[in-house]
Image (cartoon, rainbow, N blue to C red; front, side):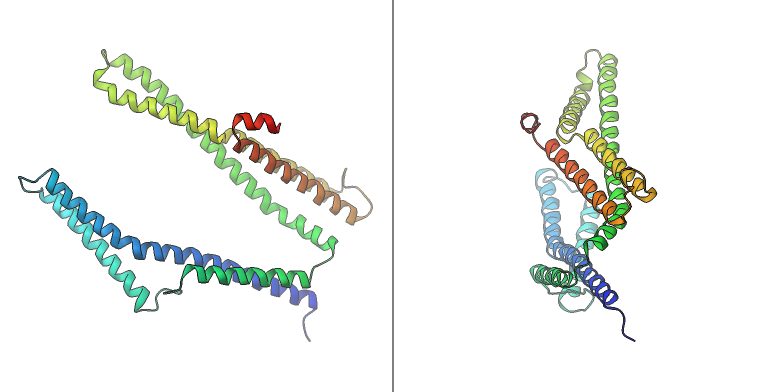
Length: 276
């Protein structure tokens, strides 16, 4: 007995998604392979040049310390061996899956896979009710993403604030300890530079505001998802279709508002005032 058409369509769409995910992974791996393949010999040459430069500019009239020679020699040999192994894997062995395959060819395969996925989805588009129900089932992943990003910006904000606190306190402590402050002038310059950079970065990236907006959007979406699950207002209509349609419309409005707030944070202060 053949499987239902719906099951066959779902299986085909899942296979297309797997193919797209595999191609994305292959593209990332191939980029790293190409970078290491051509970057490692360059690093070997730079290591030898630095070694020679130290000899010429520092130890021209004397012998280079044994420890320096041992370090540079070990690094150069290690990098040379790594470069040889990479060239062997690229041109003579079958260790790498996409050896001698240009990245643009993999991108072309990815574009074709995306096109096949879109055409297959268009030929078997489910009714709006099914798509809205599927949309509701995908929301937990969106909530997780929003909360992860919110925690990331919250931690960034806390780290910046603690660096500001420590640097500000250290400037006062170092200034009070050294009188006059000439012995600690370098420390004071470094601390002042740190405070300036962190203050400018906090004002530009606004991690606290981003964390608040993301957390607020996640909480609002979760509140509406709970209301839909419990069948309470505003999702207490007699027909499930109306509730799903209202839910999808509301959540998409929240996501659009979140994107607008992100765009406002990315703009300069004058641009934000014009948008608002």
